[in-house]
Length: 154
Image (tube, rainbow, N blue to C red; front, side, top):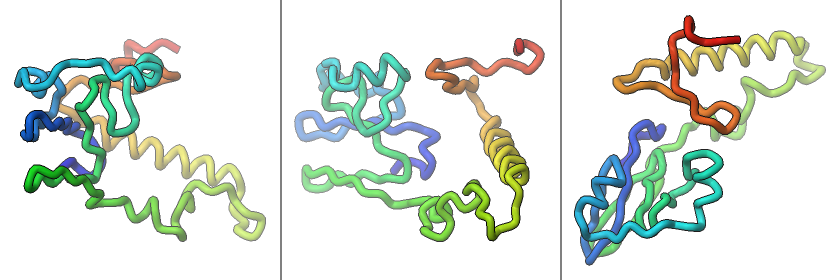
């Protein structure tokens, strides 16, 4: 089972009727049950973002378990299914409600919507700044290591 938001990765592979899994691909490759063959189909995505967005990885036959999903290995069969969804983001009534452009009948000026977006974004970032490992982020397609604000340059 992978955590709901995908903070910690889970990689898995089926080899000789055995399920191999780990939080890093190198744990699977260390078993010597899997041949490290490049998955050429995802190379453009990996080279441009250093990441794959779906279940595929840079290695053939090694997969990522998506956030909010679980994997069941029973009787030699593998099934994955989603066990959690973010209801606030998927409820038809609430989809984009917080950040939707103001309608004329709402009487809410554009400036309020921008301020609310900024507040929600800052809170989201603040909640994710706690980590036991170095932090990083994607910025304009490049991975940038987090540094203290004093070392940032404008």
